[in-house]
Image (cartoon, rainbow, N blue to C red; front, side):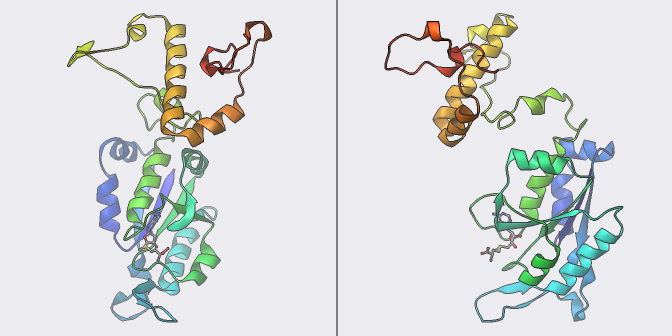
Length: 257
Ligand code: SAM
């Protein structure tokens, strides 16, 4: 998969991404990341890329021409036109589902704004997706673009050592991941839950699901509610007792369907 990051700060994105798992993925050519300097496409003296906003107001705006020419230069060397994702606090909030969707693309162009942002006209003309990494404002789109590259790359086959690890992680099945433990069996008086040492895989799986459900209910009630709507417990009539208490969903048979 190829990421094309259009930015005024190419060194920032390349040095930020060129470590650990992503560096290995680039070495193995599972992913390819290039940072394209928007400034190189400016036709104005001293490669200026920003100007005052019409109507007044504080701050400078990135101009349409260098941004447009930069996007087109990249598009023209691709086999087919790629999606152009503008990183913006005004966009759709980035999720694991969106990362999965992007991971199916061959090429992805990520456009980073700076200063007060980018002239609206080029956004209207060239951008296919607007993505935010959360409800706060950063100085530039570089960190958001790096976050997108990181989250999407992990889903490209072969990037993670063990392909399974992406499948069981938080959000992958709509729930937060269960707690995990490594050696030693006891640390600071805290023991690893006994069931994880039992070697009984079915029981371990049931325990993990229960933990995932509890954790999601407590920490992300919004996700829990959505999950429960999409996975209504398959109720076995004869097990229903007359009670006011709701049964724990993980206790219901066929819960996973
Ligand atoms: N004036 C813009 C507004 O109020 O929506 C904010 C501009 S921000 C200071 C500069 C650039 O940072 C944006 O063009 C965008 O590329 C990036 N940026 C800032 N916050 C972001 C966020 N939460 N998600 C994605 N990109 C963001």
